[in-house]
Length: 200
Image: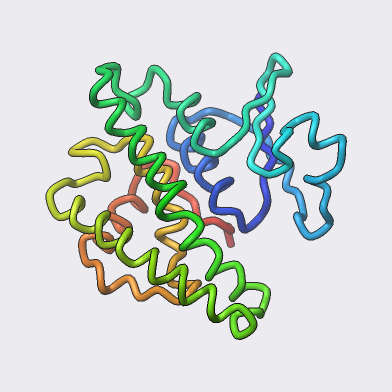
């Protein structure tokens, strides 16, 4: 059985759980407390040289790193990742967009709020939100035309973008500014195997 190394509140780790659940792939979790810094220790760097979560240990002992790369690995051969190279490129483009234009600008305002340092970092939060809002507008416009991020079928792109967009309000964004995103978030919660980032 595969092992997922994650942390309780990581959106990137949540991506992987959502996909594994959807695909009905059994796994065990090893949840790290990032505040203890175990992900930076030499032992963990043998699992992930980038010293961050998530990471996956396969049944044969090999490791997978970086959330979107892990999503692509598990989506291979499923309906979530088309065989057609043009459609696949379209989906991959959204994964690059998520990392370059969304993740940092949604995740850091949330992070600083969670650790009660929002006031201390207000300038950078404001800057990040100025960059994050146009990215969310782009997503919203795409979802005006499409049911899902990359078209009319659920794909890897939805699993990549969902976690940090769904938690954006924890960092101060007001998602009712983007009605198509709100519709998409509700639809995603209805997929098989959905679970909250922290289950009650």
